[in-house]
Image (cartoon, rainbow, N blue to C red; front, side, top):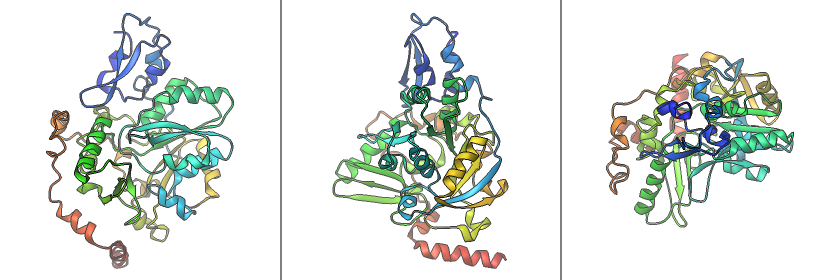
Length: 389
């Protein structure tokens, strides 16, 4: 077929083809695993090839830039940084764009805790986009909405995974001076179906419907990988690696097939800025470390430099080397490895006992670490640093 059907499992699920098709003959439907793939009505298809032109997989070199500089960053505002996954860099970018009467797109939970890209226009809405969502986000019609806003002369910020940013550029087909983009350092994305199965499992286990979820809560132990979910009367927090969903996200056996062959898992970035956790900050810049979180920011383009300059007034920043920023960032070097058990991971997802059968294991090291007070862990790190000197 001379249309998007030829992409097969290289498809990243960005939905650019669905949004650009002039005949509406492409529909994104979920497969057995819960990932979106394009289904084409070939009777309606006129072979205009717009779907292929808008597909980032077909144009892997589109809008790729290597970092010009790298920075450590943390938000000066204690309230805002505690709502963010790390140092609050992407939230500050949203703030400065909204302060210009701009439009911001990013991933948020809906009323059913499904993750979808939404448009926000007010600072009061920024909290919806804060913190990480470790599940594939539904871009829905956000590319077409962003194109309309740009045509109106509005400034637009779009944040997403590298493939989602690549999908946006392929959909637009050209640069726009009013568009700023941020790609997030991505390990890979589990399916929305898996996440919904997990929420149902936890709701049954705790006896109440989960009404909020945070993959990167700082409430109990500060910056780290603690999840927190709440029901009307209860809450639960723990380390992601000790959780039935979080453990498999970290292990990487639940990702979309395209994630294991990701063409964006390198230093040729799609966004004007690239943002992630600066996990190596304690070793390379111990004085900049904060238990509230530190972001690593790559400036990839001239527009990225402009956006970063706007952010700097609201943040503490320190220039770092590219080598320092790459520590513990394996997905800036290569895609996540495809585990052998990925073949079977989703095989029984529709069975009632699916979540109960997922393996977590003893993980003694992680359990001991989770039991040690955070202040003791930080003290031990500082003593280790002194000994090394």
